[in-house]
Amino acid sequence: MSRINSNIPSLIAQSRLSRTNRELELRLERLSSGLRINRGRDDPAGLIISERIRSDLEGVQQGIKNGERASAVIATTEASLIEVSELLNSIRSLIVEAANTGANSVEEREANQLQIDSAIDSITRISNTAKFGQLKLLDGSRDYTLSGVAGDAIDSVRVNNASFVNQTQLDVEVDVIASAQTGALYFSGDIQPVAGQLASSVTLEIRGPDGVSTVNFTSGQTLDQMVSAINNLSSLTGVQAELINGDPNSGIAFKSIAYGSSAFVSVTRIDRPNDPDDDGWETFRFPDGYTPPEPFDWTDSNLTSANRDAGTDVTALINGALAASNGLEISLNTTTLGVEMLLDEDFATTPSQAATTFTITGGGAMFQLGPEVNALQQVGVGVQSVAASNLGGVNVNGSIQFLDSLRTGGDNSIAASLARNDFTGAQKILSKAIDDISILRGRLGAFERNVLQPNTRSLQSAFENLSASNSLIRDADFALETSELTRAQILSSSGTTVLALANQQAQQVLQLLG
Image (cartoon, rainbow, N blue to C red; front, top):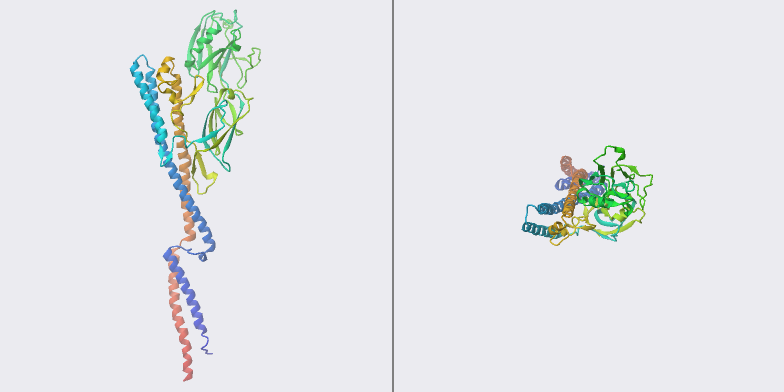
């Protein structure tokens, strides 16, 4: 039947041609943009995943930039520390030269002191001026701030890292559970024919962590005299002597000056008599970790014969975790807290004392290394001041002294050291100062090598994989799209032709009208 009011073939052709044109527009849009997903209707689920990946990509890319910037900060900091290290080495050579009094004049020593003063000033100047942009690096502004440190319990504290997760400050509790000890040997004074005196001549080899010396004693010498002779050599041996219970008749205690397992005392008689059972010389020790009673008691069954004894490191807890220890020094290194402390002698040797607590109130340098802002992707680093007043803090003659004590007029200047014929104080301070700088450089180097560089490589790998995943979801496949474009073009051409034929078909009704 032929109808002209409704041209169904034409409607079908129009519908098909419209669909083909939309397909053609889609292929042209994808080929012109290079993207398979240009709007949500193209792939709703794919768009959601792709946008999340794009957000991750932005965070990862910024994390890579943050790591590179952090590496630049570390490199700038280390460049200044290298200069400080060179200055410390030059000071050390000047001190060693000044100690050679038999071969240099007063004027030369004064010139050395002037150079030392100048080098110390330069170290402090570097501490105050080292910058990265507007950030000061070595003046202590990158260090952690502390509150409530008890001076009678902790002599010095260095916080290397701290995490303030869900808190504005971090409390640190230190509890000594076993005391630090020196190496100690004991010689009884009442076993001699005359109490408190030597019955015969004795030659002793006194050995300690600093060296060894041989001392000769004649018969009849008192134990008081022996103590004085041994203490005169303490700077050479690292061993000191004292009367037991303050009484010559009780005997002598030979002790290492330092505490810890690396400190020891050895007392050996090297002029053995003909009858080894009748030389009247024997020293004793207590077991490791045992605290001798006060007053000393010779009837204590824990005493055993020995000619060598080593000290014991302090055992302490930091926030409930067992700390690593070396003598009076303790340290803890975790992701939430990295701290090093030098405990006061009384506190470290008295476990019965209550625990001490201080607070880290803030500070430090916080580096954001991951794509997300949370504690797991942040690393805090403390960079202490390297000013002369903060380097080389060691116990010299009963007080903590620093590098600036080597200045003219200081307790460890060349003149002061010569006055007491002892440069060991200056030597200890310099050695500690050099160690401080070396350790700081090592920590920063380890942070760069073991944290920053692996983190950057990991983020770069993540960036590559995320980019590939996003491309797979979002980017257009040009081979497929060009193929579909060609198909759509052909269908569009044929659809137009078919539509024209469908329209012409209705005109055939005119033939019926003659």
